[in-house]
Amino acid sequence: MELPTIQQTLFVLFTSYLMKWLMPKLMALLKGDKKTVEIHEKEWKKDVVYLYQFPRSTHMPSMSPFSLKLETWLCANDIKYEVRPTWTQRSSKGQIPFIELNGEHFADSQLIINMLSRKFDKEDTKILTQSQMGTARAVDRLIEGSFVKQVHFSFTLLHRFDAIVAFKYLDHLPDLISGETMGLKWVPRVVTDVAAMFAKPAFAKKLYAQGFGRLTREEQIEQARLDLQAIADVMGKNKFILGDEPHAVDFTLFGHFATFYYLPFDVVLKRMVRDEFPSLLDHMERMKERFWPDWNKHLAA
Ligand SMILES: N[C@@H](CCC(=O)N[C@@H](CS)C(=O)NCC(=O)O)C(=O)O
Image (tube, rainbow, N blue to C red):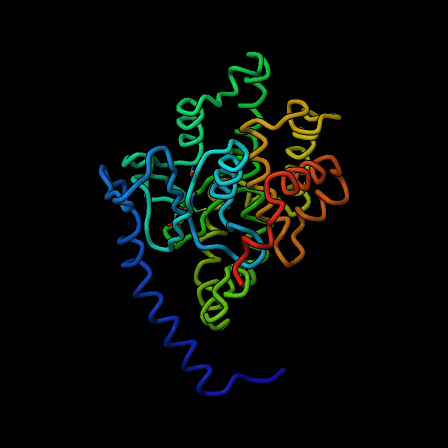
């Protein structure tokens, strides 16, 4: 093994020191439950959604499952929208994605979809039975609440979740936040490696506190498998979760699955979906083909 040069060692030490000092300040700037937020698009056009999300990444239109869910839903429902890429802006809830519509700010992908469904007359309640609505909600929460449990980290753009934290973030953090994956090829790998080194213990700690981190690897995989099986069982032979057409819950599934499946490295969940749950893989590919026929055009160069 080649030892690092003095310059490389000094660079890593200096970057680590800088990050430690800079991160809390940066987070204080980005986060916070601000009651009112500024409207960025002053010259808005009526009924056009301005979608604020992270800039395009190299392997998928958005690294954020919530953004990919929302943008795919907008495409599917023929709602006029314009993407406003940003690394720094945040919603009234301190997160991304958020939208502006007719000079008003709206936060949280789920609440946004609910609000837009009402406004543009796209409500699932008009099509689905009450029992289907119940199933849709249960599957949606299974995906975002169990498979992808949200855990708040004080560090950066990346925070969360059960199986996803364990198998995507903890297993692959340096690759995941590398400039190459995020679409920021000019960021030196050493910088993102140092950032990963600092972030990883926080992910591990939260996952441990939440409980999933205390399970053995086999037990974690078993839990993830049960979640995947439950979704596959509800879908059965349908093309989409509740039938031949997609509803809001299909976009949740797509957003969360596509953002690990299309990563350029081997994630345990990817293997599970590919080898054990062909119907879920077909679902994802069907969604991608139907709503992102020009997927490659929406990737960072
Ligand atoms: N429940 C929210 C979750 C959004 C979320 O977790 N967004 C992440 C990015 S994927 C975020 O903004 N994190 C805060 C940060 O990075 O500063 C939604 O559905 O919109």
